[in-house]
Length: 272
Image (cartoon, helix red, strand yellow):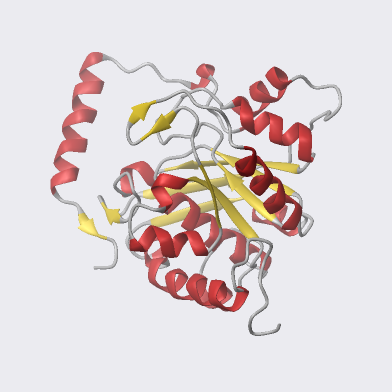
């Protein structure tokens, strides 16, 4: 590989590889040492094409979810079965993996800017900005960049656009699916919200069982399925349809709130 070869976004692949290696080595213990990541479906990843793949997932933290997927994807492609044991797989990472993220999140500090170079397709959210509700037009350049990333490789997106569970699926994801016709692979994660703070940088609790289930690609009729049909398929596939919602009693809700407040006091930085 030429030293200064670039991807379609102008990122130098050698530099991207070094960033993935360094942060892969640093973050590996978050899923193997401090907490345990249980994986299902890694064999599905090895049967996917090299490009034109869209991963859809529920979302629990800003960065820990994506970092875990980078680990699982590369470990699986290196022949590991439902395991990220032995971090040597990160030495030759798949370099055409991207993730869709809010531009304001990826510009919020030096660390997010470095993460962005590892594969972020940054977009301006049309419904939320700086913690406030907004209503603005979709930028054509954002759509174009997502399409460019799908054409070049694997793209991770969180179609709810928020870490809050059971929020509606954003219809933009369905439009992208109709337009690009990618292989759509659902992923369901759990345990990350309990393990980390909202950003996914600080360890909130140790010895939590995290899980990542990679499902078979969705069956989609790209020509005849309506946007609403695709949205419903996504809701069920990532287990965010209202039918999955467990109704908590007032007492359970109070206990959960107290636990979260107590854990917040014990927050530790992830590299400690």
